[in-house]
Amino acid sequence: MEPENQTRVAEFLLLGLSEDPELQPVLFGLLLTMYLLTVLGNLLIVLAVSSDSHLHTPMYFLLSKLSIVEICCTSTVIPKMLLNIQTESKAITYAGCLAQAYFFLVFICMGNLLLTVMAYDRYVAICHPPHYTVIMNPHLCVQLVLICQLISIVDALLHSLMVLCLSFCNQFKIPHFFCELTQILQLTCSDTLINNIVLYLIIILVGIGPFSGIIFSYTRIVASILRIPSTGGKYKAFSTCGSHLSVVSLFYGICIGVYLGTAITDSPRKIAVASVMYTVVTLMLNPFVYSLRNKDMKGALRKLTLGTLSFS
Figure 1 (cartoon, helix red, strand yellow):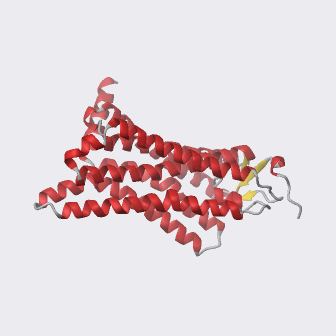
Figure 2: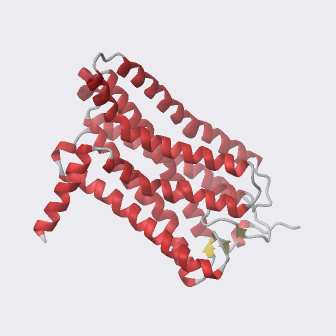
């Protein structure tokens, strides 16, 4: 089969989660509800952190940035999917597909790196409390966020530029609900050896690397907590990182579960359904984990709610 030059590709077709017409209204309602909960939950965290002076600390500064990233990440994927369901169209332009893949890579990578920075913040707070304010100063926090952003942009840009060099055959159907990089690579007629090598190298660098950093941080944190003589002191120290540990466990647990699940199944539909877990469900649950397990956040949200009601 002669490959068709990639510049002549007009659009791809996103097959979505199901082609059953009867399921489309259910999927639309379910996804819209989860999307609104994700945006509202993360937006409330951002507003609570910005409005409450008690939360103007490195930990909550990083949390607010993570919430913004999660809003952007889910907004990259879900609105287009909802539009396709509503209009009964599966089409996405070539440029739109690459743009979606690019921004999804940026935000998912940045979220992963921010979780690592937050683990480092908890490590400094628990293992080096006298020097915490000196080490985690506002200048360093801003620098760390900018570094995370720069790494994410370079990562996504590298993948996107390499995809631009590929040619595609006559098969433009993507068995997924968004333009995921691996799904795009499966459609090409070109040799993807270099793309796959770069993909796995970057997974090691910005995936396994940060995860190893988180494991190292919590190993030191646990060792430091165990040296605290009182039970109350141990509980207080652990409670400061409980929410972050829950989010990290949720994110990496689901990602590993999805990866193992896709490794043992050849069904594209099952892979797409599994991907919903880390692209939608995890981002929706994170705000609830932070708000329900954190007294300071619950207090700030209560003040924000009361202030909004009194103003209205």
